Image (cartoon, rainbow, N blue to C red; front, side, top):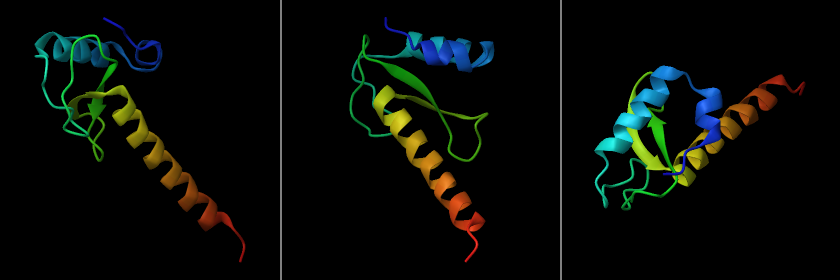
Length: 88
């Protein structure tokens, strides 16, 4: 099963253990926590955090769905920071 080097480098043992447990419980066809489309063993999957509380997991999600959502959130934060820092 493919694993993400990012998850092992960035996230701690607790997260890696929770991800492994979630992958062990995955049934082919279970819905993605982000898009609702089916997930299958062998796909690149992430353990998705809840938007407001990163200590809560939303569930497994396609890696692309999860990281896209994270990029959108990060870009939105950066845009707000830049907008507030400009001297008008």
